[in-house]
Length: 114
Length: 112
Image 1 (cartoon, each protein chain N blue to C red):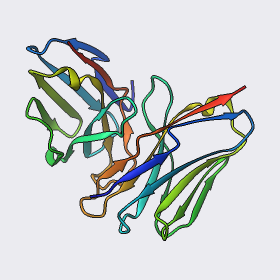
Image 2: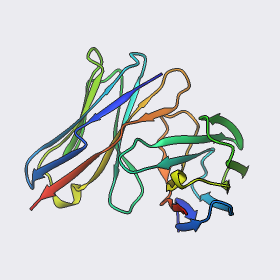
Image 3: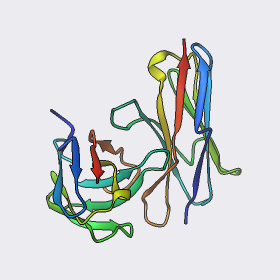
Image 4: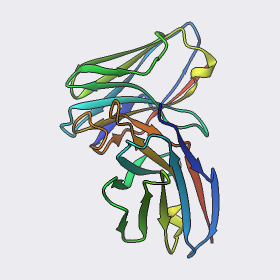
């Protein structure tokens, strides 16, 4: 698959579990993003990475821990989540971190926290 | 900080008619306004964008208009077709940190 891929596509976890979401982009972009999408709410930007360096953390709880080992891969490590964290988690990438660069989204991971 | 309001939350139009979705923003320094379309079960995709030095931009059946004085911009879809059914999101680029602030989305339903 080309573009931006995410795994897993669906994840169900208990509040005491530890899991990780993975995102990979095949577009040669330098910036990567994590968003949270909840029903009938605006997309919430969580983290921004530019050239592997974190440039934005929008007051995200520490139970979400991002990792960006290189410009093509982005992870979101999850631990001790709450039911209200259930949502669609979208990864995106863009050529640069300037938001006038078109953001290309992955298909998302549908997360359910029991 | 920037606040983006999007209306309506749901819009139902007859196939062939036009649809208009409006977004208002608060920061007069904002200068970039994209629109994304998200079909059911699919990822958001950019469909059109406009910068603050332009008042209108068209791409076939879709157009975006910007009123900087009133701080609002609108998405216009003409001759709507079933494949236009989706959720449409507006966004505004913050001048302070260059990040996008998103509207809550409009679910567009095209009735046959």
